[in-house]
Length: 98
Image (cartoon, rainbow, N blue to C red; front, top):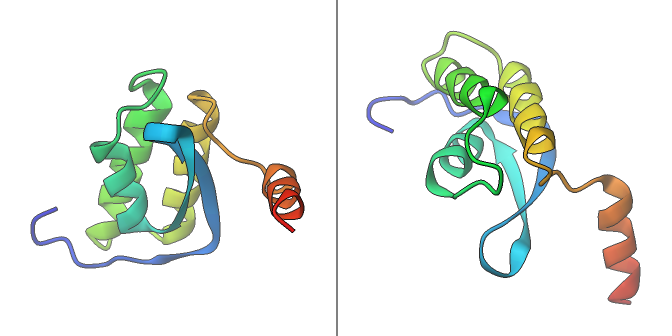
């Protein structure tokens, strides 16, 4: 990501289902979101919200915006690609493992 240094943590993580085996990934910061947007093949490709989320993350990493902007954009991109994992899904998965 070059000289970008302003990695800001999200106020709450975003959970997405990506990669082989569709394991849940916990995204807790702007850099993690940017890495996720660029390193993983999204199931529905890179739509408009994906592009906006990448730009929002880069803006935060450059010190131009706050983490909340990137988090909202990343969450919207995850919804657009149907990979967002809701808190209810996470709770059910935790209960199933008890």
